[in-house]
Amino acid sequence: MGVVLRNLQNVVPLRRARLRKDVETLRHILGIQKFDLGVICVDNRKIQRINNIYRKKNMPTDVLSFPFYEELRPGKLPCPIYRDELNLGDIFLGVEYLMKQCQQQSQDLHGILTSVTAHGICHLLGYRHETEEEWKEMLQKESYILNEFNRFTGRQLVPLTKKCSQDG
Picture (tube, rainbow, N blue to C red):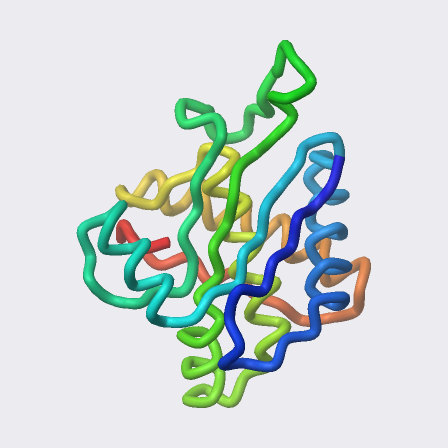
């Protein structure tokens, strides 16, 4: 099983091979290599449209996750019965939105894309951040993932979980 990585935007130059390698490392850390995962990079117009349709928020955002298993409890991996159920879902990355944030904060785009993808994968695995308790649980998971990622790669990525919000 694998990662389907699509770049449906042409506003921001993107190194897909690097992002794919980082996503594969995240999958390895979480032990989810047998599951398919979609990562779709989009511009502000597209992510704003998706955000408006599914969350009734008519604004661009950094990441939207669409889990295949909507009722998954945090920390539990799915137990698919059939081969075509070996899917975690799709993550839409608002690359243009993230690029503007990176420029404002003088941060590396590809590092942020990896951190935001880790955030999105947490959502696919049942984590939420709508309450203080959920936020703490998700922050703990993201911190673990990125600490392991940093240990493997020598990078210095940090979680981006927003406190008690429904964004992401």
